[in-house]
Every structure is written in structure tokens, then in C-alpha cells.
Image (cartoon, rainbow, N blue to C red; front, side, top):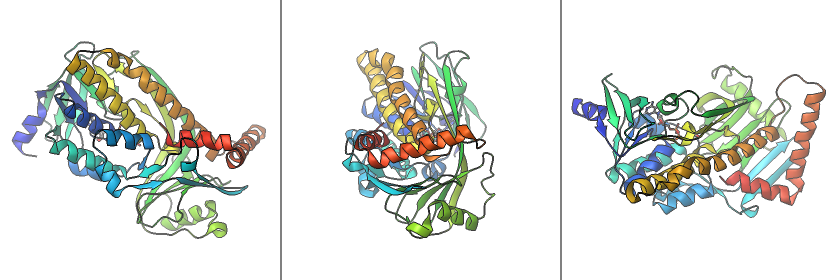
Length: 404
Ligand code: APR
């Protein structure tokens, strides 16, 4: 980064200062720009890091509608693939659900998140959007007034300040926006699901033409296609397992065992491109507005990956926030901004409820075996049996599985 770039990054003003260039921050930036609102996006990571970070990839139909509505879906229509089948492999057998024929009859679109983020970034910069990479927001000040400011630190350690009318915290769970909320100003709901997953990205073609959910006495295993060459796998593991603890052979053998490959066909193996351990946790902040500071995406709520809702909630919240900020700043109408938190929380809690239901469906209750555990296990098997046999349960599942 040149000197002039870093001095430009260190200070400035904008009507809306957006923290974070993930799905939430970039959808918000694009919509504000298109709505004639002066904004700037400040991102801690470099452009390369943002464009290469492999995370989610299952886009809900509503997310595609939002991106279409704002002319941001060209990339996902060109490279994304619709997906509408999930397969459950359990101790009571295997069954498939074609969820595009159930509920609201909607499919997912598989489009790796780093490709979506790259599309959004290109669109924003091509439209003349202001964005500073390698610029870390340190803290938000004066959010209880109408001239909040953000102190930032550049890659060269130089500090500075951005000032705005509003600050949009789209900088994730560990970002400056959350850190800057005065103690006691928000209710912080938390839930630890007590389950951890080894999250894997394999350079191997998908082994089945469906999202695969395997429930096994040794723990959960999951299979999600990302591209024709790359597949996402999840493997339930002990809390605190170091990501590197398992050899690749052991991982593939365990996946094959839990996915019952001996019954349903071999898994297509390949080198592991990425691995991490994810503790399944959820949290929700309430309210999502503190004066001139507004939260969206993971900064607003964290959701377990069990139902692929995180990125979809981030896009939905970014659209609600953009509309509310445009109403306020361009048309002098503050109502939507006043409703923003409540409207988001409605979607967030619905997604949290379904995500929790999925955790209960796919995992044995962690903890010591015993009567209670056995009781829960029978409930879980009955839930699976309802999903396999009951049309209304299948419709409910499909509506919540794809919906946000
Ligand atoms: N200053 C500036 N940028 C920051 C800071 C900071 N202090 N802290 C974090 N960031 C940046 C990160 O580098 C990241 O690019 O904020 C961005 C947050 O993006 P995401 O983590 O992708 O969060 P969000 O846009 O809310 O999308 C959330 O997407 O990745 C999926 O499933 C995941 O639920 C998640 C969803």
C-alpha cells in the first residue's frame, strides 16, 4: 500500500461508514451507492484475503431474489448451480428429500462465498465505491450522538479517524462494532450447542448428488458439494480437538464409516485443501441499533452452520439496513430505521430456532450415556422418522431449510 493510499485510508468522512467487506458490508455498500448515499467501506484484511476466504456457499432462494433485485446476481447465475436434494443416512436407513417439490418449492443455489464476495467487490468498485483494505476499525465513538466516529489503524500502524452520520457494523462477531457497544446497552443471548465439527474442504468431486447428512453412533458427518471439483465435509469431533490432530487417511476412513459407504457407495477422496474446527455456538444481540451504530450479519448474530443460514441472514439484513438508511438520509423518513432491529430479529430468531432443531436432529445429545440421553436419542430418531414419513413435516422442513 502506497503512502498516499494509507494516508487516504486513515481519515475521512462519509454519511455511512461501513465496517467489514463480507457479504453484509458489501451488499450494504452496493445498495447505498446505488441509492445515492455517500458511504465508505473499511476492511481489515487485504483484497486477496477477502477474495480467497472459503466459507459458506449455500444461497437461499430469497438471497438470490435480493441480489437479483439489485443487479448483483450475474456471477451466481453464470457460475452457481441450483440444488434441491438432501439425503439422510441414519441407523434406521436412508431417505432423500427433494425439497424443491416441498414447502415453498424453492431450491438453494450453490455459489462459494468467496466467489460471491468477489462479485460484490467488483461491482462496488466498478460503480465507484470507496473501500479501504488493510484498514482495521479499532473502536466506534459517539454512537449516542449524530456524528459518530471510528478510529482506525492502517497496515503501517498509522492511526486515524473516519466520521459519519451512521456507522454500520458488518465486521463480524469479533469486530470493533460489537466491542464498542456500551456495557448493558444490549442483551446478549448465547447458546453453546455443545457440539464441534471438523470443517473440511476436499479437492474431490462430490460423492453424491445431494447434501448428505449422516447420523451415526460415532457422531455426525456431512457432505456438501461446492463445485464439481471441490466438496465440503463436516465431521463431528471432540470439543478442543486441534484441527491437525487427525491424519487425512483417518479423516476419510471415519467419513466413509459414518456415511455408511460400504452400504451406499464409496466416497471420492482427494487432498484436503482446508481444515478448521468449528464449535457450534449461536448468539444474538438485542437490539441491533445503538443510536447511530447499527449491526448486520455476524456482528448482529452468530448462527451455527447446521442450517447454512449465516450468509443468507447477512444479505437479508444488509438489504433491510440499506433501505432504512436511504429512507432516512435521502428522504428524511426515520421510520424504517426505527423498525430495523425488530424486523431483523424476527428473521434471526426464526433461523436460530430451525438451526437448533437441525442440531438436535443430526447429533446425539452430548454428555454421558444414561436414561436421559437414551430418551433424547429416541426423540431424535422419532424426529427423523417424521421427516421420512410425514408430508407436513417435510413441507415445514423445506420451508425453513431454504427460507430465511
Ligand atoms: N475492522 C475492519 N474490518 C473488520 C474488522 C475490523 N475491526 N473485524 C473484522 N473485519 C472484517 C473481516 O475481515 C471480514 O471481511 O469484517 C468482515 C466480516 O465479514 P464476514 O465475517 O463474512 O461477516 P458477514 O458479512 O457478517 O457475513 C456473515 O457469512 O461467512 C459467512 O457463514 C458466514 O455467517 C457468516 C456470514
